[in-house]
Length: 402
Image (cartoon, rainbow, N blue to C red; front, side, top):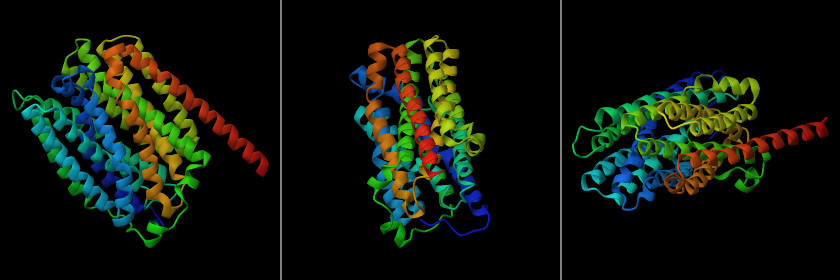
């Protein structure tokens, strides 16, 4: 889709603000799932090792939804993709509530699958914000949308806290009904986003994905996006159940998840500025180091403070790594290629993450919280080594050109 011709970024700013509000509302979908799914899974699943399976199904839904989201956006426009995703978010809440009422683990997994499909569309908000933006404003537009996640980090856990006991004895049933209502509000907000309509070139022009995917910058962007998101998902998925296993109350895990999600999106106020000043690769590297710090905090103890610090560092590290990797993706495609490349990037990230996500419950229950934290370190080292290699490659190319 061609960027709208303009001499300033007023339209881009308006879209980014509206998408930030939608991110705040729609982001509560994922927060509610992450705060409750492992606990619900542990009570509904016949095998305790399947406790985190609903979260893994959520990730599968995100992976499965990325390419269809790109196709809908390329064929009918971003707004159609947004409305379709919001419908799945609404249905996710209704199906989850029904699953809790009848005590069905498979039906609850269907609900988290629908929530994942919704999440795939929500992930495209950050790229949609760049559609009408000038090159200089694009990193900031992405960051503005991510700022909306701060409010989802507050809204989601508070939604759970306020409603989880409203329908005794069905813990969390009312929470999911409330989440369905929030999805409808998000749909109304998204209906006002003003984005360019797809053109014939958007549907037919552009290079093959295989050519684009061979670019070193694209490879680095995907690798760092995969590492950052996979590790964040692994630790965040395991944390609520780990806290419960350590004898900590549900209210403590809700608060920890809340601070984690705030930390995920809070840095977005300045991440775009940091990327513009220091470059995406350096910001991603700092993010990876923060993920290592999260693992160190988790290994240092099992008190509420240890868990909270670990998840705060995890959140900030995810923000730097993921926003930085997303900014790198924006540098790898032409305007008419954007929806295909962006959805392919997300498919690779969430498809890989889905594979690892299914092992999180078994890892935690078989080897404990320490094992979850130790697993973080090797991918971090891999990501840092890849960034160093990419930097050396760029310097060699620049030297040849000079």
